[in-house]
Image 1 (cartoon, helix red, strand yellow):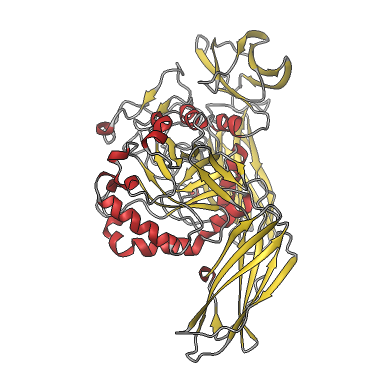
Image 2 (cartoon, helix red, strand yellow; image 1 turned 120 degrees about the horizontal axis):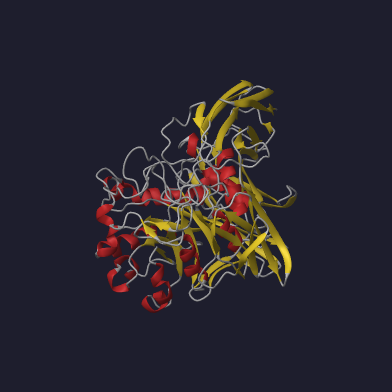
Amino acid sequence: MKLVFHGNAYIDKKDIFVATSGFDGLTATISIAATIKTYIPENRPAKLLLAVYNHQGRLIGKTDTTSLGFKDGMTTVSIKKEIDKPYLWSNNFPNLYTLRVYVLLNGKKEDVTDIRFGIRTFNFDSKKGFFLNSKPLKLLGVCLHHDLGALGAAFNKEAARRQLKILKEMGCNAIRFSHNPPASAMLDLCDEMGFLVIDEAYDIWEKKKNKYDYHMNFDEWAVKDAQDMVLRDRNHPSVIMWSIGNEQREQFDSSGTLIVKKLVDAIKAVDNTRPVTTALTETFAEKNFIAKANALDVLGFNYKLYDYETLPKRFPGQKFVATETASALETRGVYQFPSDSIRIWPPDYKAQDTFAHGNKDFTCSAYDNTHAYWGATHEKSWLAVKNNPHIAGLFVWSGFDYLGEPLPYPKFPARSSYYGIVDLAGFPKDVYYMYQSEWTDKPVLHVFPHWTWQQGDTVDVWAYYNNADEAELFLNGKSAGKRQKTDSSLHVMWRLPYKQGAIKVVTRKQGKQVLAKEIKTAGKPERIELIADKGILKANGKDLCFVIVRITDRNGNLVPDAANRIEFSLAGAGKIAGTDNGYQADTVSLKSPVRNCWKGLALAIIQSGEKKGNITLIVKSPGLKSTSISLKAN
């Protein structure tokens, strides 16, 4: 619990900086810099009392300063403190310490502030990539926009927590917040859950991308905005790098050289413990005036994976990270054959605003075979980073679909992006399991598509798997052959004539079964299944419960093309905060209590009230038996 005093001297969180300045394997040295301010003009002696608590909340040490005198209403102090056998912060063990700072004036406690921090070391290497706590670690990241799907742009901690849980389960360990700093509470979650972060200041410098964008304010505000970001966020152990932009047009002339030096100097003035990067597009040194400045600690490059191998020769001695990859396009649950033909939608820059060669229902195939002209498939993008050790990691565009930018479709009714590994409702697309099979050690076997087709159809069946030597598919008990992944393909495929019944894929290692997955032909819609991510909410008016709606046949098989009309109603101590189905061209309001399923799924978001009580969500669909789920707000 934070203690609160009201006195004449005070200290703000942004005026305290805690950094790991040394670690010898046994003892960590913590450097603390703090600035105290006062309301009173006279020079009265002040002291600081510092208390450090470990990740279990146990007090492990106290320090007080000598008497400090104010000058012009403020005083600054720098302190070093040693912590023996520290619990290091990492992705898997995000241990957090708390520094409690008391301001004393004439021996009286005037103010108190708590700062959470983590003890960790990290570095980038021009040949070997990234190291955390002296151990090599590939940055397995995604880019995230700020919105939270059906909830819109206003930040909600529980919705953000859900997004991070989904990404963590996929094996993601890093996030680039593009192209603006996130809510500070989002960084709190990254600290707690073990995500490494690129904190990004803005998208535009002096040269505009749109008529009324940040170029109008850049000259006046760029330095202040960048420094404010750093001052707010520099105590977060999750933040490992500052980014000062994205695809700036100043790469093409000498203005980029001047601006990058100015911005890097501004950031280093308030934090010289972290590297600075920016997301570049030009991979030839002679053409990139921002890189020419030699001011950046790490060069970030977007796309152009075919140049990764030659970057060390073009930029000798530099360090590299793939700040944006893929821009692949998928709609969950949509399967079109053949699956092994690549679609570039739109095919070039000129077609961006006029593209009309997609699908009539404004969808993209869920197979990893469609991408924007500047991007690549997820598989190729990841393989390019995986096979080049000098690339410290990647940040896939994007982790989740987001509102706006519905490329390849330039117009209504498309209203949200297609780039996400996870759709707007939080339902993973199939490619999610490609990353999971590559980015985690847990056994993975994901087989798709569904097995409910028309007689005479020829269906491409894909599987993502790991921890196995081979995969074998059985159609109604008869083997359709064994397949193995290769160095250039992270999935296996069978092309089969459809026969009603079931497909089963078995993975084996050294002849022994690892996993098996069976998919049966679904019958007609008969049941509504509800799955809540929690049963108890906090009665604080902010907590959320996400309830998934599944339309199944009588045997519990998801009906893959079910588009049932769903009617939500709620009784008790809460409200319906939003609904969704993940379909990028659904024009129904995200606040509507009535929504059609998309490919058998829908979502309701329940928000608690400020009073304790029971909550009942009732779900109806014409022709099906209604069902409900009970929750509690405590």
